[in-house]
Image (cartoon, rainbow, N blue to C red; front, side, top):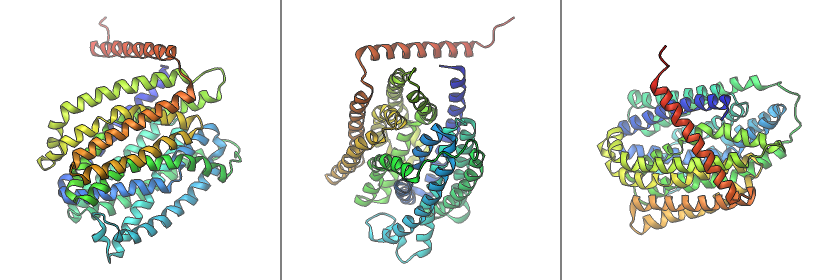
Length: 445
């Protein structure tokens, strides 16, 4: 690993760790302040927002990263499409919240004959999308320090706004939603101000809006299916049971996402590496992809074992004794990280090599199987544990399909796997030596 890449990963790693800590604090404080029922309703809103906002973005987060990495002159064409998408977000969000009172969701009764609440919810959904799209310019430019600072600013403001809303306005999930809508508006303005520096770096590259949207839409279906296979679980739990169980399952999902934290560290450098090597006929991306896949697999297994030991103590300590019932489903659901971690690396590879349809194909299967399993297992009386095991089974299916598609794309042989393990051992030995050297301190004169 080069010194430059090591430094970049160090910056991203520290930034991601800080951002994660801020989000964990926010989640725990909001859960304690709202209580299980209100937190369950907020989790329902957050899950709905995640699905709809990603549907609204038309795959532009990955499209921006792909085209801007290949050509700095694509900035203006990409921004024109992004502005059009911002308008689409408002249209879709307003239409959706007008229909929500008719759906069997935990929040539906609160929206009936409540136009102000509907408008607040629409704003929360609509303004979230730009904060997904615009950071793509920063990561594609390999400006990782700025990316870490901006995302941590976002996480810090979200924690400040949401907790302050509960303390000042009262423990209502809608107060949190309104506060976060304001925060996301502020962050969109910050991102728009920041990415202006990328304008005029190169002559305009005539990338057509049709080409931009086509790439994003081919990828977008898979992105939406991925969200449906995970976040739709909360909506299903809330619709079939009650807000309390939705709140407990939301805690389990939030903790499961901790296991995907390493991908936030290396995603941008890894995807940029694959894009660059895909354009260079002299250097293959195959060894890097295999090494990354094996490293992620080992790390995911280690994290799943650690979670099984630690979560029975951590959940009551962090969220409060009222969330003790979330321990068992959280431990089971965290096991899905063993499959989702390596699968995520495969998705990055497919997208970076201009094959987003491969991501979409396997995530479509997961998006169909996941919600179906959750519905079936809860309906047959297996409760939250059943939903968690359904999540593990869906993740396993996703992983198997990813490996099949990766093999068809990369054509690995046994020799490649053996060489990959050798590189993994070398990297681990080097990491151990660096750790020992750091613990020993500077040599004494």
